[in-house]
Length: 338
Image (cartoon, rainbow, N blue to C red; front, side):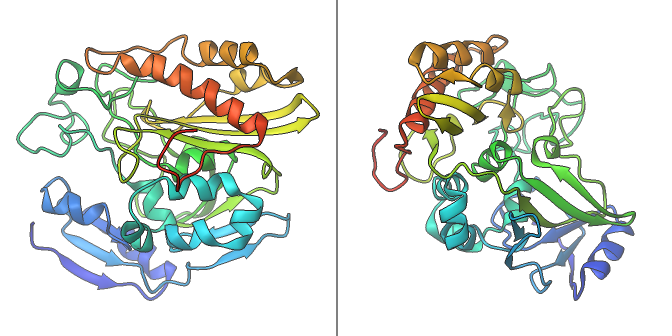
């Protein structure tokens, strides 16, 4: 790990001002991903700004009837907050599907959104990686790529985004609030992460010097018919091969509204609004769910080791929609897939 200087920020304004003046700065809060990356010599910040004392650790009601989750609210706090479990159980379930209890006690809402890919080559400074060192190549395309992306890839990168929480937030149409040198702005979660294209080293649409202050959940009610289905190599403490966040608003046996987002398959949480439209006003049948899965995966591209993900994703979408329609969400405590 390289030597670095350290500053504990006393206000959001100070944190933004200090970060804007230094391109080598990284913010640190829970540190559950950044410290790992520094130990692996992937991240080499010359300066860390500790933001843990900033007043961003509360969950509050919004005027519109939603919730605002502060950037420093831990994953554990968010998952077990009664307002979240009652009104946004999809988000609670997704958070509990990720990491270990120890990590969830330290990891924060803002940090979860900013965590970086778990690509083997990204973590190994001895190998080329366009995401770590732009222009050096992507050995994952012809190398070990079991965990890599099948949607939205480019010739420069096939890494996946690792967050479970962000997948549920994409389905719930959450909005990220940030503050930077140019003031405050709001970014829909679906627009917060980006596809690799020819700049895979850039994960998000966050600008230099900007800090996440909160994530706002709109008041839509998907508390009855939802599920977060996560398929992985083991049922605890593993990143998703494929995950599906499904939320439906049912009127009898008819789907009045649908939200669907996938994790583990792309450089960002993958949401397909055209596929969701195929469900609106339709009966909740396996044939309809199968058509939706086919639509989402029509442009999917597998590589040597991860081609299995295409069929896995197809079956996961159908199962997740079936669970959501039946009101039988996937349990994150039973060590089995329903």
